[in-house]
Structure formats: structure tokens, C-alpha cells
Length: 118
View 1 (cartoon, rainbow, N blue to C red):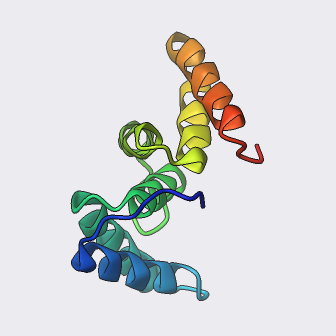
View 2 (cartoon, helix red, strand yellow; view 1 turned 90 degrees about the vertical axis):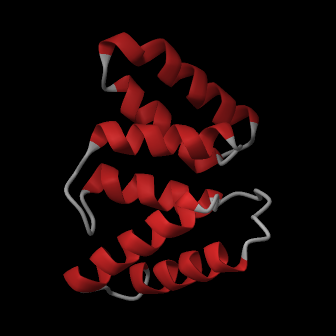
């Protein structure tokens, strides 16, 4: 998931870890919804990886309704903080939109330069 520096906020870290645990252990729908809410809380507190995870869940409708506009917004937040997988997600979302193709290609280039295994 990248080598981004995490916030010193213990609450954000706790939310993110609990969300990660729920998300990655064969979750039920209820657990996915809980993971989504936990990632929201952690992202609000500045947790970069949680922000990326939130974006991915929004992209795929996991634990929430699919919302590609909000997915792009959160992907860009994490991408601007250096999260390479978020750069790739931002690029993918922007490449779906004819108007945003140039920006999408730019994010893909930044991810490649940061050595993300695209």
C-alpha cells in the first residue's frame, strides 16, 4: 500500500486498523458497512491509507453505494499526499471521463515515477 508516513493520531490508526481487519477477513455485508464507516472516520482524521481504502470501497460499492464522484475526490486526497495506489485509482476514474483524460494520464505517470507496480 505504499510507504506513506502515517499520522500520529492514535484514534485514526485504531479506526483504520479495525476497518482493515473487518475488510480483509471474509466480511459480511454488515462488516463491510462497518469497515466503510471506520475508514471514513480515519480518513477524516487524516489517515492516508484509510482515505485510499475509502475511495476503493466507493469505486466498487463495497459497504456503500457506488459513488465514482466521491471515489475520485477521496482518491485525489490520498494521491496528493503521495499514496501511489490512490494515484492509480484517480487515474482510472479520470480516464473514464473524456474531459479528465489528461489528468488521469498525469496521475498514472506520477504513480509510475513513484515505482508503483501498475
